Image (cartoon, rainbow, N blue to C red; front, side, top):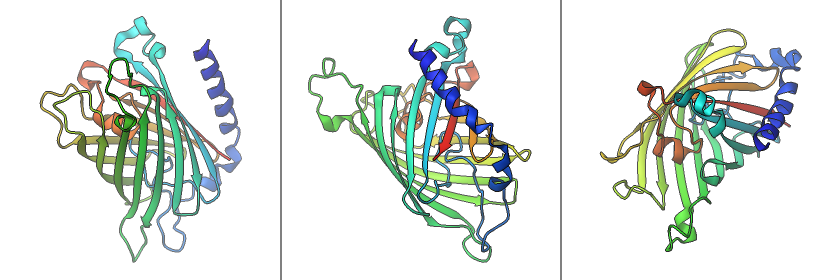
Length: 284
């Protein structure tokens, strides 16, 4: 019953997006304004990694992210439908260069607050890159005191810091580098450092006026040699639908927060252990 309600709500959000084709021309402008690069990425995320795109000043964006369970189990879990997780992310554009957001994910019942801020914007005759900072603080509310009798509130906390460095090479191709540091006060695997480092690589290639293919990968730099977790590799497609972007993707990490997809991805592309997901965004 709960899953039916969730899917119904997602459809209610999605339907207006496809009814706004008259706005498509307004959002698909690739010409620079004052020689600044525009539309480097159309989604707030590439797939897992944040992109350099920000919500506009005084706009409010709701992102409903849904990621099913592994497709490896086939009909036994209806290709992951029975094991889906959802993340609701509320993002507000304080001004043209600063976003604040709060989210809640059913994966480990994580609450997260974040800020995203533009430092430099790519410009012809100026900076060759757009550079954006991203900082987040999360609370893992799923940790159980009955299993962890010494658990304190601070053990639930995690942090992430990213520098997003992107360049739009032409109207079709954009690439991004994302050096990342994240820290979890509690790590289940006692062989893994609490502070972990990674470098993200991502890109977008426009296929048609509406469609693009997106790819990102996280290279973990200090993962324990005994860790069961994998580097996240994700492939997806963006569909522009009249002022909004509908994202569909496959990835080997089910968690959608930075600490979880970089530090706790369990899937293996070689074994078909991957997760299908999608993001629906609505601007108010």
